[in-house]
Image (cartoon, rainbow, N blue to C red; front, side, top):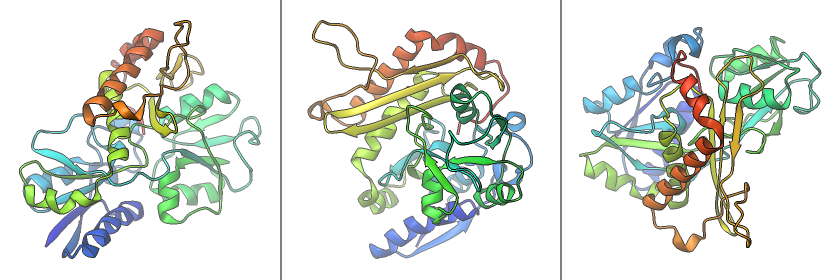
Length: 332
C-alpha cells in the first residue's frame, strides 16, 4: 500500500487522484489521506498578513516525516526552493500549461476590461506585472480555492480574476476562461503547472515505484526556474516570475523581478538572457541553449543562475533588498 498525502481542495484531490490512478495502473495499491494545512485554515486572511512559506506544505511534510504517508503530491510552485534534507522530489511528471489565465464573466479579455475594473488576485507577482500593462485597473486581494473565487466572480465582487491555467484545465473549468497570458506579459511563478511528488529521502522503495512518472524535460525546466529563484533569494518577499521553455533551438528562460509595493506600476525588471550577436553584442532576447549541451540538473542550475545574475545586473538588486524587509506576500 502506497499512502498519498494531499490537501483537501478539489484541485489538490484531482492531483492526488491523478498520481494514484497512474500508480494503480502500474499495479500498486494506493490510498489517499487528506491533510489540512495552515493555508487551508486561514482562507480569510491575506497572504501579506500570514506569509506563504510552508503554509501549504508544513503539515503534509510532518505526516511524511512521521511515516503516516509515503508520498505527498504538491503543486511545485508551493514548495520552497531548498527542501529539508529529509525529503526529496522523487518524481516530477509532465508539466501542464504553466501560464496564468484571465477569467471573466462579462469581458472577452484583459484589453477589453474597462478602466477601473476590479481584478481579483492575491498574488503580488500577478498584480505588479499586470499593473505595468494596465495601471488603470484596480487589483484587489482575492483568496480562496478555485470554486470560491469563481463564486465571488459570479456574484460581481470583481470583473475578472487571474488563476493558473493548469488548475482550470485539470478541473475542466473553461466557461469564463478568456485569455492565457504569454510569459512576456505575465511571467509565471517558478514551477507553475508542474506537480512535485515528494518522498522521504531514505525511502528508496517508494522512489523506485515512482520513477516511471518522472519527465526529464519538465525536471530540467523547473530545476532551471527554481535555481534562478534560489539565486535571487527565493525567501525574500519580492514578486518574481521565472519561466523556462523549449523550442526548436533549445531552452528559453525568462525572468521578472518587480517592486513589492502594492500600488507600484514601476520598478519592474524583465530579462531574457540570450545568445551573442555575430558582432559580440549581447541579445536581450530568449536564451537558447543547444539541446546537445544539456546534461541534467547541473546544466539546468547553471542556466537558472545565469538568468539570476543577469536580472541583478539589469537592476533587480535594489528591488530584492527592499523586498527582504517587507512582510511576507504571495509570489504564486
